[in-house]
Picture 1: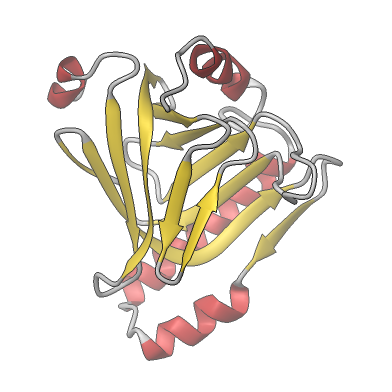
Picture 2 (picture 1 turned 180 degrees about the vertical axis):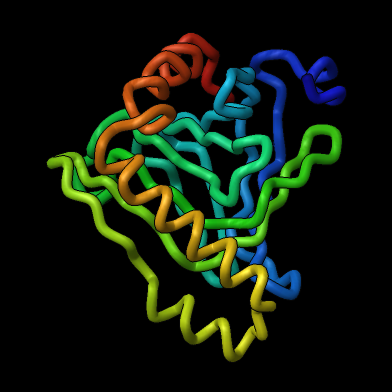
Length: 184
């Protein structure tokens, strides 16, 4: 078990910071610590919680849970429902560096590729063009390119076939989040 986990209790605030290669700020938000299981560490955001990236602020249109695996090249977000007008999918997986933890904060480098499962069950890979562009403009090292491509290749069939943790595992964590008070 990760040593820092013993310092977190369900409902504790965890700061999530996704960067781009080279350290440029990307998505940042606070989430609630939910717990850990064999798939990794789970956090959640309630409907109405805020998140931002340079030049844009957003408000969550449904509850969602975030999975940071211990040693895999992705971070996955699972949504409670298809929010009207939000266009949010059921599952959104960011291919990213292995998450790094420091006390109650987690960071990972977003590597552009996204594996997305819509509510109708269709799955697609998004931002392949951005991944190719950033290989050149952000100078991704060959080992990072290889790790991102390998992760994406493994994620597509796992997400498509609803293999754990891309099955209904997340619903239990959404229930944990739903039982927590919404902060104003």
